[in-house]
Length: 384
Image (cartoon, rainbow, N blue to C red; front, side, top):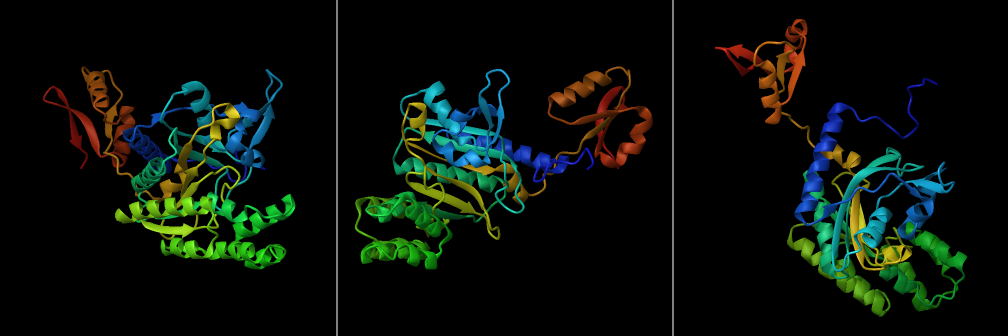
């Protein structure tokens, strides 16, 4: 094997794509800042017991682990920055009231999450702590859509779900842990045949509600159907009320909303509304998020939390090519005033590329402008 080959599902980012990703990173961070989110930069490595606390428990198999040569303890290479943001909110910021943080950095996973996915993602995300109301859910959903529009994802569809509905339907079932886990897996894959088999010992009303869940997918009318077929459980009714309000608010702004009441993503740590954003003609969700109240419990500070994240390397594929301003070509020489002219241009934000005099003519085709001496002054001229 050639020594320059990379591991499977890792890749270099070359200049053209890197420019798009970096442009998008800056734009998303600026957008989050305009909502009041402050930037945090967690470390790439942490002690595994901290990194896999709370929401991180589901990430155990996705986390690369190694032994710290200083402490002898197990370290984890982060696969998701969400648990790190929760740790920072709980122990370092430790503020009363609402706290907003955003982040952007590499996360590495042991397995890709799709056929064409990478094991290294550039994760951008935003988390809002300290408010349990729907205002927080709506804000992070709107921010996620705004960031996707910056990437060129227009007319995105928003999928809404709520884990309280599944919890309410399954409450009261007299089943062992293995049977309950099997039902959750069947709901996740929407396997109606397996659900019929697994629920054969349930009461008629319990079985009817479980079998209805995979069918409750579609536009906002699904919520009215759910009120008719699901149990009159307080947890379920609150979840349906919340989803109805959120769907109405998004639809008022022209957003296409879909409902999926059997969505099982993050069932073990999400505590309420969850959402996924889909781009037209693209199979995978381009952004995901939701409510995970009590995420800070494992760090000693339980409180309300909601947020979202996306892989900027993935969504950058929707961005149109960046058209940078034409670079300026200049010679390397000791000519009077040249170095000062170059420094002044760069200070104004211009890109000035200097080359040896014998290479300047060869490079003319790759540059749009040139720094030349005219009438005893250095001037920028277009290259014909």
